[in-house]
Every structure is written in C-alpha cells, then in structure tokens.
Image 1 (cartoon, rainbow, N blue to C red):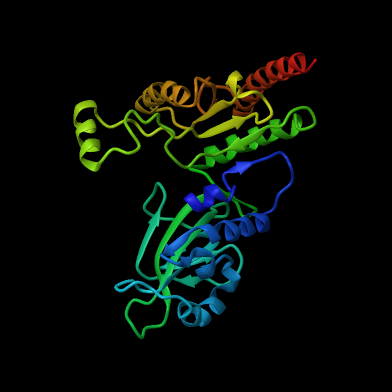
Image 2 (image 1 turned 45 degrees about the horizontal axis):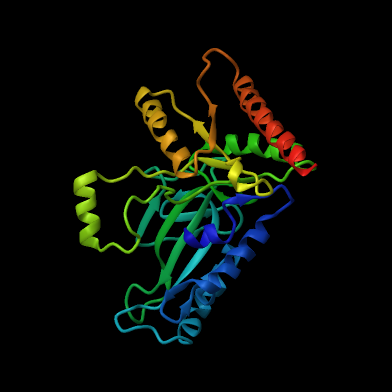
Amino acid sequence: MSLLEKSGVQKRASGDFNVSDQFRSIAKQAEDFFLVKNVPVSSMLCRYAADYKQFITEFDNKAAGFAWPNGTRPHAIALAVAAGIDDNKLILRKGDPIELSGSISIFGRSNAPVTRSSTYLAIAIIGKPHPGDKPTILETYLHPCRSTADLMLVDSNYERETFRELRILQLEFRDRIRIDIEKPLFDMSLTPHSDHSTLEQDRRHVEQNGSHPVLIPDFIVRFPDLPVRWRADIIVETMGFSWRTYRTEKATIIPKMRAALGGIGHVEHDFHFPANVPQSERNDALKDDLRKRIGKRLEAWLREAR
C-alpha cells in the first residue's frame, strides 16, 4: 500500500491522466522498495496482467540474479485489474483468467463476485510452494479501484460516486485554482507519544490511555497553492449508510480527523438524507457547499495577491 501511495495513485490533479501512466509510476517508485534486502520490488514486479505468462516463464532467471537471504523463498509481485474471482480464478477485465492458489483476501468482504461493474486492483505474490515446483500465485489481495481506467483504491461504490462529484468540481475550477483530490490509505492520527518509544512504552501508553482511533478520511480536497496557515483543505466524508451506529461513529471520528489535519473543514456527501429526495439533489448539495467554500478561498487568495 505504501508503494501505491508513493506512486501517486491515490491523488488526482486536475490534468489528464491514464492508467498506463499509473502503472509506470508504480514501476518507477518500486525502485525504492525492497522485497528483502538488496532485492528491489521493481526487479521482481509483473505490472501488467498481459505479461503474466511470460513473467512466470522468466521467474527463475529473474530470481537467480539476486542473493536471497537464508530461509527466504524467491518471490515476486504481480498487479492486475480484475473483475473478481470465480472458481479460484482471477477474472481479468482483459485477457484470460489466472489460476490462483493459496490464500485470497478481499477488502471489506468475503468474496468478489464478477459483475458488470465490479473492478478491483489485484495484488498477488508469486513464488514456488516447494523447491522444484513451478512458480504460481501464492497469495492474492483484491481491493476495489475506481475503474479499469483508474487504479485509485476506493472502499465502495458510494466512494466512486463521491469522487465523480469531486472531479466535476475540480475540472470546473481548474482554470482558476489548483485543486487536488486525495484518497488516503493510512492513519493520520496525531501521535500522542514519542516516535522513538519502545514496544513496552507503547503497550503501557495503550493500557493507560487506550488505543487511539484510526483516522483515515474518505477524501481530502487539497489546495496546494494556498498558504498552509489558511488550513484551506477540506475533508469530504461519504455517508453511505443510514444506520444510527454508523452515523454516531462518523460524528465522533470526523472532529478528530479535522484536528489531526490542523483544524481543517469538512463536508458530507449523503446517500440517504434528506430522505425522499432524488440522489441527484444530494449530489448537487455537495457540489453547492463545496463551490461556496472554494469561492471564498479563491476570493481570499486573489485579495492577498493584490
């Protein structure tokens, strides 16, 4: 996941992009990540599903180029855009299915049925179950992504819709102010104790104070050209469920996320309330709220520039 975040997959500027650029960026960043000591991910990375069969054929030669630590089996990473899993096969959006073995994990659910719109980024570990075996996929993780043309990881179809609305606004304002859309993957909590604390100190801290909640905003609308002191960025939370417990948790966690990011503002994209109105009106409400906020930031920026 760190590799995906570093590659920029989770951030969207207002300019054009394509999925090939995303794969190239992942491959470039992979030069700075290592499977084990002295084995860069980039050297053992199959970034296109279309190359999988050839990669398997060349696996032994690739692995032989490195000194693997004792007790560590040579392994590699494969990426693919998939429609889901059926009968222990990874069903690709393009190309033949890939046979899977070993464990399969899917974000947020127990299965990944193939539907017309289902789209996942599959991350797989390639290796040999035993010495002398043929290389195969040993572990597979699937996470929903925005579409076959965009690898940005999302948590739900609701978040896909939220991104679509944010993208409309981003393009609407692109000639006036730079707006970036970020979908964080990692906890943004304010760490209450030293980064240099020991495991024992961490354990005592949790016993005395409790573990802090994980703070991962659904989206952050960022304004990189505006002064940091303005705290201009905006958290956008997708309100995908009507359950009381879900909304109570959101009401508790949102102020903590705002505080962790310096006291920035937030808006909500609701899919249930107000009740008895078309979703298009709720979508418009989100955009109208953000337009007002962006407009105020733009006016202040222009005043300061005079």
